[in-house]
Image 1 (cartoon, rainbow, N blue to C red):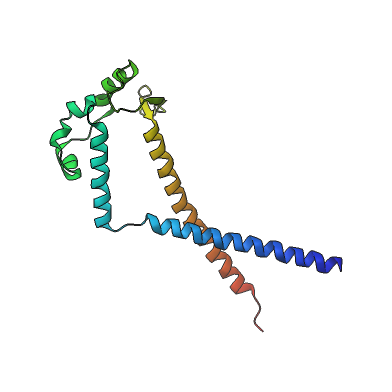
Image 2 (image 1 turned 45 degrees about the vertical axis):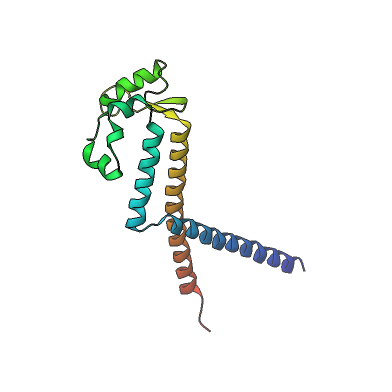
Length: 170
């Protein structure tokens, strides 16, 4: 009787484990598919994000210095503004650290991060506000979901293949 109970308990534990894997895989698959977008949607999202970013920068020193009032679209932003090196932003960061709260953004600066300094120069200072921290957390979660879903999908497929091969035919 004890052996039957132990066997039943083992079967139940394995069933729960398999159910968790299948539900987890289904949920991660749903999240993964929600991250996929077609190129038109992607361009539309980029445009919306640009307009939101531009509006959030209105009244900041960098908005004025880059003449962002003349940049009407994400495409304008990409074609009219050149890529900037850290040295361009250093005076804004200095100003921000000196108390000019609207040098780069309107939100209160929460922390200043330091780069690792692997370029052979001194570490660079990177100011973070709450909205930037939230963006990094969300991006990290999305990237993790994609990687995790891909790995689970692979391992479940591998496991099912092994089971298929190992199950004896009757």
